[in-house]
Amino acid sequence: EIVMTQSPATLSVSPGERATLSCRASQSVSTNLAWYQHKPGQAPRLLIYGASTRATAIPARFSGSGSGTEFTLTISSLQSEDFAVYYCQQYNNWPSLYTFGQGTKLEIK
Amino acid sequence: QVQLQESGPGLVKPSETLSLTCTVSADSFSSYYWGWIRQPPGKGLAYIGHIFHSGSTFYNPSLRSRVALSVDTSKHQFSLTMHSVAAADTAIYYCARITPLGWYFDLWGRGTLVTVSS
Image (cartoon, rainbow over all chains, first blue to last red; front, side, top):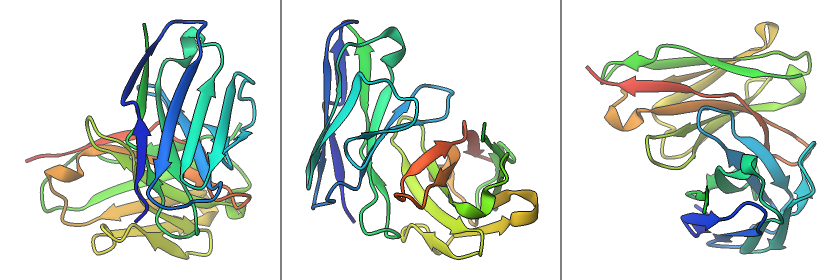
């Protein structure tokens, strides 16, 4: 099983500032990496797939990078609606087991 | 706009069977794979399994012995059955769509809380 590790667990950032979230895979997943945003009581939302491609209707302030085992989600200028929990997920070697990171909670500083 | 909606009992007794259904409001049901993910209280997301409209399935090995997925294409529904549940199965259960363009979850339901308790 590929283990996904996200850091930090909690990130406190002020609105308007940049947020950088990290995700590490225990073995290479190439660019088969997705990022999701999750707010309480809502459906998780796909932000990024293929490590760096924004999903439909996702604002340009969200960007993803990385390949292999190291990945980053960057939110360039935080808006109030961006404070949520963010998960990375690998889907390498489909249809093998999908695994998620444990999440990073992005909170208002 | 395509939507996914989970439904089923919110309370299940230990050792009994959990059954959930996901209804998809779209005509493109047969073009995608459909999956289940759960989130125990205070914990992260965990993949359960997925199914294609043909009925082919894949399960998380840790749950394979207790889980079965099924699909009803005519109703645009797919279902999760989990046997012999225990308190550790208490979680929010999400259904989600898997796009064959990349095999990631591109659309999710809002989730339904299932509590295992006597």
